[in-house]
Image 1 (cartoon, rainbow, N blue to C red):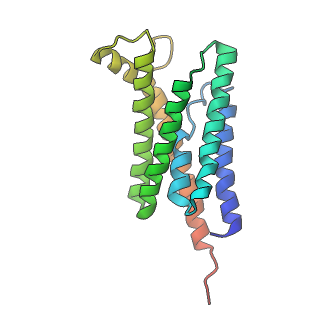
Image 2 (image 1 turned 135 degrees about the vertical axis):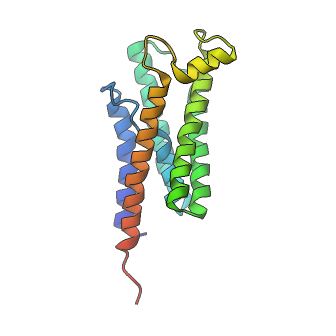
Image 3 (image 1 turned 120 degrees about the vertical axis):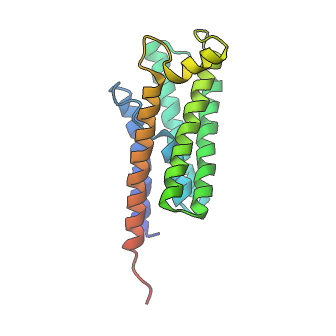
Length: 189
């Protein structure tokens, strides 16, 4: 990959992670961010594993900043367990991206990012169900955590929809940039 295209791809990843931080101040946009797509695209498109650290570190750093912001401004208690769980999801997205990289077709890329989004949704909402005293520890309580959540907040399905849209949009843009990089690569004589 040409250095200029690599820089553009890395800049997209850093910009998307920065967007996560800035979007905290615009509540309507705060969940329309490419959470799992960052790690997924890094592994799916970067051949060198050392480059996978860029999206992973960008995600972890932005996630820790967001946690700290919400703890300081809204009284949410920061928990190491929650941070480690999200980091494990990011690592899983790297693994799924690595699998897709072996045979990167449009269908595999879409399926991969969709799987990453669903994984993050299921894991994070199941963790909320387990750790939040508001939810009954029954199948009905789990279903509430997966669908409507707390009555004072928008339904958790809306958060999933927004996260999925952010993941799909970022992956589409990233895939187009990477395809453009392949097309504009000079041909060897």
